[in-house]
Each structure stands twice: as C-alpha cells, then as structure tokens.
Amino acid sequence: MTDTPRGYGEEALRQILATDTRVLEPELHVEIVGDTVVVTGVVPTEERRRAIDQVLAEHTGTLGAMRVDNRTEVASFPPPSTQERIS
Amino acid sequence: MRIAAVGDLHVGHDAAGSLAEGFARIGEQADLLVLAGDLTTHGDAGQAQILVRELRDVPVPVVSVLGNHDHHAGEPDAVRRVLEKGGITVLDRESTVVEIGGCRVGVAGAKGFGGGFIGASVTEFGEAEMKAFARTTIDIAADLERLLGSLEADVRIALLHYAPIRDTLAGEPPEIFPFLGSYLLAEAIDRAGADLVVHGHAHRGAEQGSTPAGVPVRNVAKAVLRSAYAVYVVEPKVGALREVREI
Image 1 (cartoon, each protein chain N blue to C red):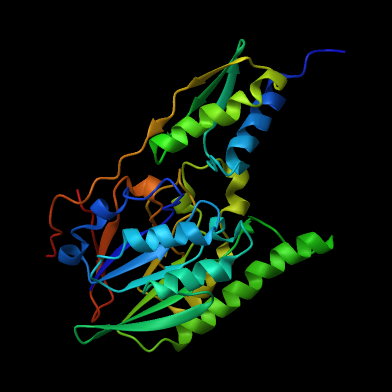
Image 2: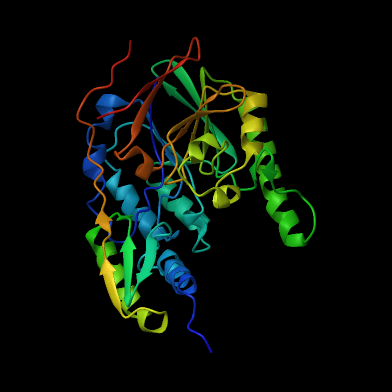
C-alpha cells in the first residue's frame, strides 16, 4: 500500500474547515508541507482563528500531517473615514 | 440617492461587538443600507440576533436578502423572523419600495442560485438532481424579472446574493463559477431593467462589472470591499450611477 497522496489530505482538511461549525471558513488555503499543515487566509475574529487550531488538532494526525502552522490573519474592516463626494 | 451596500458579513457567535463601529457613521453617508446575504456563518437564529444588535443604531432603512450560509442550519424562516423583528426588511423573491426624501427606491431581492455563465452553464437535462439544480435558477430568474418589471420606483435595485455576471467573479477559481452565479439572473435584469445590481458570495471576486446590456453590477462581499460597506450614488432622473467608495 502506498502513502496517501498529499492532495487528498489537504482537501479533506479544507472541507473540515469549511463545514465544522466552529470555523465555517470555506476559503482558507490548506497545504501540507512535510509533517506540517499550513493554513493561510483571512478570518473575521481572533476566536475563529483559535478555532482553526482546535479543529485541525483533532484531525491532522490521521490526514498526513502532525503539526499545524496557522498563518491566518484576522480581518479588519474599518469604518469610513471620508465623506463621499458627488459631482 | 446614496445606497450603502455590503454582503457576506458571516456573523458568528463570536461577532458581538465587532460590527457596530463600522456602521457608526452610515447615517452621514447613505440613505439606505442593503445587505447582500450571508449575514450569518451558518443560518443560526442566534447569529441573526447578534447582527440585529450590531445594527440597532443604524439610522437608515435596511433591506436584505439571505445567502446560502443563512440556509445551512435549515431554519431560514427563523433567521428571517429575527431580522424582521429587528427592523430589517428581508426579501425572498419579493420587492419593496422605500420612500426617502420624496424619492421611491425600489428593491427587488432574491438569493439567486448557481448554474454558470454563457458558454458554460448547466442545462435542465439528465438526472433529477441536475434538473432540479438548473430549474431552481430558472425559476428565481423568472421571479426576478417579474419583480423588477413591476417595480414602480424612481430608482430600481436588484439585490442578490449569487452573481449575475462573470466579471465580478474575477479572482475566483473558474472551476467554481457555476456555483457562484448564473447568467440567467443578468438576462432577467436586462429584460426588466434596473439602475444597479448588488450581489455578494464571491469573496475573491472583483467589485465592478456590468450586465451585457450595461446595468452596473457590484460585488459587495465584505472581503472584496475591505471596508465596512461601499456607497453607490444613483441619480433617479437619469439612472446614472456614480460610485463613491469610502476610504
């Protein structure tokens, strides 16, 4: 039996992050590099970012990676700072 | 008429206190706020309640459609009831007219659905599941055309969650375009006419586009705007759109 191709594990983890109600982020990028799963993308809150670590910790051992490198960033959507101009 | 628009707020149970500041000055900048769906992360009524609380100080009328996320928990009606109780008008293949300073702003709202775009769209053929997929969008587009065509208003807005054109999906993987929108929505808009089309759903897409007949289309997914909302100014008399992005 050969090792499971890496892409299957990456997609399985991406699907988990998209559907686990603690995260529900369908557009995170997941890549397995060596024994590490690297996650990049933008999340709305710090709580959501921590949830990624929690959820992946429950799955990585069975999906081709042992460690998690959570590189996601918490988004900032500042309020408008100028008035609109209408000519 | 100043239309503030944003979609894909994806309010979760962790969102309390995270949105209100972004909307604090909206009363100075806009006459109406439209929300282009995916208000919640997974359609939980409690999440809708959090959104209502975050928007409680918004002093302009708020009109919304639901998105696919708002259906995930299988209780879109509960989400809708919470929003409406909080003063937000929710449109599901429905329209409304808001009178603002003597101007009638008509909004035809529908979630929309997928199916793809000209040259690469699904057809109502084959398995029952595929027929149902195609038929869903056909029916929604027919309703959208009817709603827009019957709107008696000085400004007409089509409010969607799914995209009606390919242009505002630029940046998304082409493989998923059929799940992001349908040209049938644009065809309906072009037949009935509108001054502005607003949609969300495509977080990696582009903000600006237009239908084949030239109706301005704006993807207002929050991740695309990178701000709390965008403001579009529509002149009622000439139907011209001048776009003003807040900084």
